[in-house]
Image (cartoon, rainbow over all chains, first blue to last red; front, top):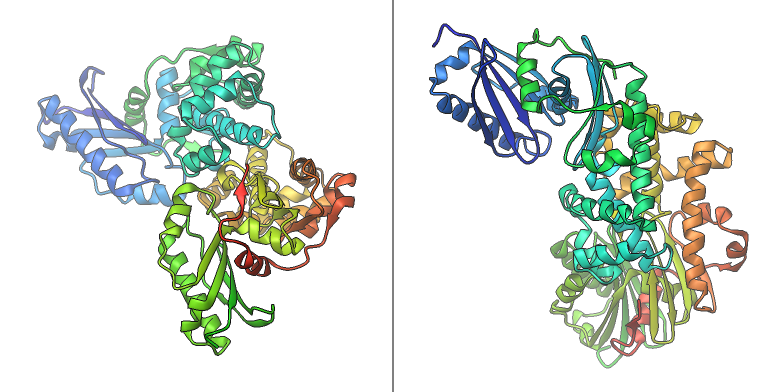
Length: 297
Length: 297
């Protein structure tokens, strides 16, 4: 077993860390899931989760940990485009034959298209976009919950709460949707709503997103305004990707299916399905020459 | 000295805590300033700052601390409208003859008009509005940096950073103002700007506000769009106050003078100057029957 080469893909995110181990022929040996691995939020926890995922995936594959020395690791992590975060992760002392480190976005893009050429828009709790062409990548959007992530679940939820707070002040119209949001949140005054969501997490705001789309589909004017603003942004983001003439464009993430019907018609026509999940993209990353990808954004 | 009645006003905020001590005839005995006193952000620090301000104001007035037993305290604190915060502050074991507790907004309103009848818009790092009429008050706006505070310094700054991040993505126009913001922040890429302001404080965002108004006054299109959106909100907020037909309407706070020329013309004509600062309003609060003010908002 120790004369074989292995390829390990890791997809680390804010809620969990997935690992996928393949042999040199592309056969799946094992897959596993460990805890949160967002090094921007909690570096020590991310390292612990990554170590846990690595160890359990070899155990599941009935391989000794010594096989790590024959394994090339491809790892996609949120926040790794931030210089301080990248430096901290590169200082990680690992037992692998090689490490290719990139963003969660990049491995999602590799997985979605099964190659280095393609574009993706991720629309889940957050939002961001990327196009890769051979050895060059361009990133758009993202920028985090406070300053960007427009059209994401967290953004839709926060915009909805802002709207409802303005409606309590008599400064924005109410609708069946604004009433439903108050019921969903169990908050029937501006004070109660502001207090409950004063420092809520992106995930808490994203819980409102399905409700917004439900009401937009019923032609509720407030929900329609919110959905159109978010979808218009995602259409504009897609246009920036399409300027690079990628071979394919995929929308992925928890909100992708809900948002697609609201995109501009010409964008909708160009959206393809993702071929594989991000952890498969991380395995592809493991097979690339180390540090092959230059970011041009 | 211990057969006299005294009135102490405290204005507690996120950066400092002001105390003003008067005798029964309205003569100023002493004024002092202590540390931050925002009980929502840090309850223990707020209590420590308030205690420090109280002790030093009696010392400055050359009065023994026993005079507190003959003193009526009026205190305005940010966040005291939130039920959990109000409960926590009412549990404070104080040595005074009586305590009238209200919001920072309420004492600012009492001070601005020298009476219980009037309306104010506060536009500083945050924004909020209130109208008081006899024993009833109505509050509008506020709701905090993440979900509201539109037209405030922090809101203007965050909106500007969001705009510049979109301009780096090619999704929003650039201008002399967007260039100046990057120079001011020493950030020349989306990544650098997003990383620096990812979790910046409202005060850090509010530092951009003067720059935005400078460029709006020079007819920069981006700065104009930002200033108009914020000012339109503050005009709408003012209209809600004026529906209550207050005797006066005052704009106060660090951004009040910059924003006034951008308000709707009919609103501008109805804006008066504040007569006295919030700590004087807190002394007026100390003189009111305890818990006289009912919030109708």
